[in-house]
Length: 386
Image (cartoon, rainbow, N blue to C red):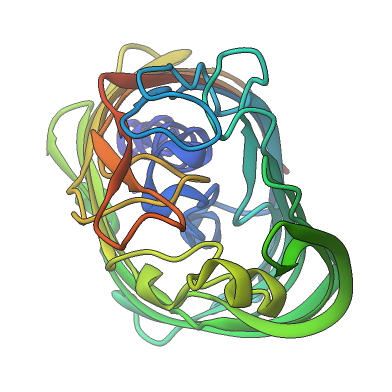
């Protein structure tokens, strides 16, 4: 590999920082916080990286029909800021094998409706947290073609508290999935194409639920139950690519499909009362990303990225009122010997959407209109080759 291309690949690896980590709750079905990239397997030699991100979405809507409060009130910003992190270690096992371990947070949510705006959902909160450990192995079958395989353990927990008195929490649940992939590369022009399938992971949760239930006209009593339900963290396909297009310049990008229509949170007590799921999505998502990396000198390189996720359409959930997104990102990498420090930022335009009114309104009644929302995200990664 020519020296300039080697440095350029290092600089262009900000793709994982500016399009994955900082995407956060703003895109990809609303709860995705990691794109599950296998790019670390292609780093040169032994390698370790640590990444931090800070995401600040600003999501608000206007109530369209009266419920516990009159129509016309704004929700205020209901999407909480959050931090996230990941760590990866890669090593070569001989000339034809590479092994990597990655710790990340694949999904998450931080919902916090202000309780002083007059919006009916005011005071409602929800959190979803996960941690994943992924072990990956790459076998270089020929100088150009590789096969990738691995296993992933995901631990997930969450809780919800709604304005109407409903509450739910689940214990931590750990379950397993796998990944399979293939890759082609031509190092002399810094070209690489990889396709990775990540399996679904099924969680069987035990939930503590409580709600205020009307047992007779005007007679409301508290009810508490422990119920079991299943949730699927969906399968996905990642197509990642890069190629040198001129001296010191790299074109790179990705196409990611996620089967979000399979992601459903349906605690039994909630479903019985609301006649609906707590969380679900109307369809799958495809996210497109394109970037341009440039090596300025032996020390500095940078990149710009653009990403787009089309809106699914239909009503969005009141706990995730966005649909689709467009984002622009910039990043810069400082290299000194075996150390690389990368900083990146993204600005995200969140897609407009509507949420559906709960009972007693009939299905198809618009409750909230969420428009002109946005988000900003920042990331920092420190990497060391040895």
